[in-house]
Length: 328
Image (tube, rainbow, N blue to C red; front, side, top):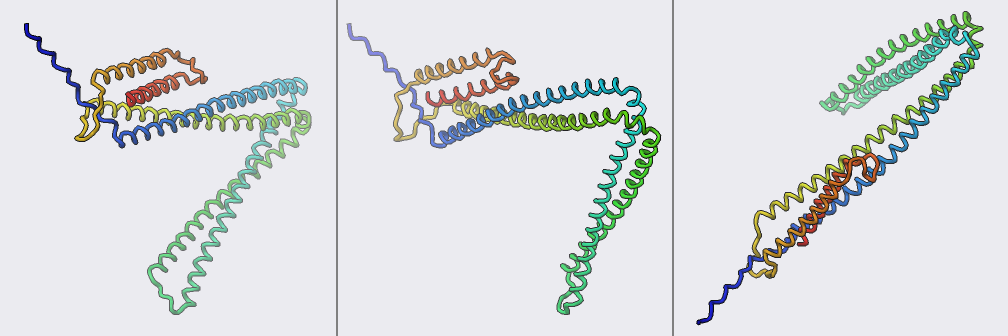
């Protein structure tokens, strides 16, 4: 029998070209951006943890001082007796008078400032007019007219501001005088009860100042915590955008293999080898997906950030998958 015809040799698929310089630059840029955002994410995570600890400490101190004030003031009330209740109108009138005094002082400062601004604006116009009259060669051109108009406008605005501040000053001064008169009347009427209850209200004022300071600290820490959380969300969003860009490039490259140009060195890698590498990459990706899915909510090593860190692991899985795909 004649020799059987030999099986035709398997034809290898066109070799894929190595990544272009532009693609490598894009990959390096994405890697650099990812690294930068990861550093921001880590920094904001540390800030969040620190601010939460500081905020809890400040709240605890506030509660502790509040409890202490309540206990001690109650003890003084029992010790002093009825004088505390009888003298309350005087201490309230004293608080109102103090507030009216602060408002009157502020109104006085505003009025003095408005008067100074008006005086300076009038001097500007006076000097401009004087220079215009002294210099015979100077022409009254449009620029000079515009300057005078601007100065005149400033004078009008300053006069209006002065008028308003003067009215406010008069009102606050009258309010302060009325509050002081009311306080002095009650001081004469309740002199004995005032002297007896004085330790109670002085201690109450002391605790009030302390609690206000703690409240301000709590408010500041809450604002800083909100800022840190905002930076964390921004970094996480940027990582998601980087992940979307990587997927988009992968989808574009998966549209079909690009053959090498004439004269380019071929590659012995067959389609079957590329498929095997792709399967291996996908299996590694699947492993990271399992890790991502097995992280229970609230069990993340970073306290209070389980959901966000789970998203971060998913994003890192995508980045690692892309790197493995590039090397395949």
